[in-house]
Image 1 (cartoon, rainbow, N blue to C red):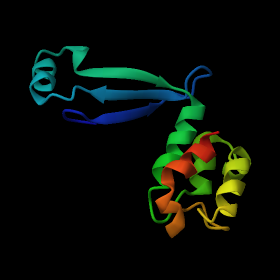
Image 2: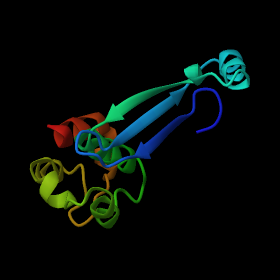
Image 3: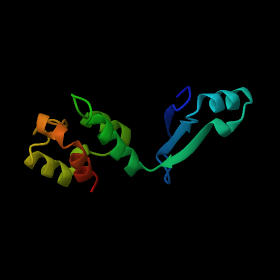
Amino acid sequence: GLGAGAVSFLVENQKKNYGYRTTNSKFPSSYIHSVKESSRSWFQTEPISQQTAMSEFMMMGLRLREGVSADCFKKLFGRDLEEHFSQGLTHCRKEGWMFDKRYALTQRGHLFTNRVLLTLMD
């Protein structure tokens, strides 16, 4: 990401880390100064595990009307979404928070988004 406060994600797929998140300085003046000086202090790097990446993928995807793509999940992580989140998905569907055949929130589910995410991440 470019600019103050921008966040990027770089997939590395190493055994220890799935990738890295970089976060640029939030303050425009310090971001500009650091970039001009070619200093690496304008961003911070955080290692991200595959588990964290999968959870964040779900969290971001469920905010969309169309929801999460099981095919995209499989391509990115090499795992089956339904198997990985099976207990949480079953619970969310029983509560009426998610559709039966899609990985998307119902209107009721949007009212309980935080509960849905906590259920899936357990």
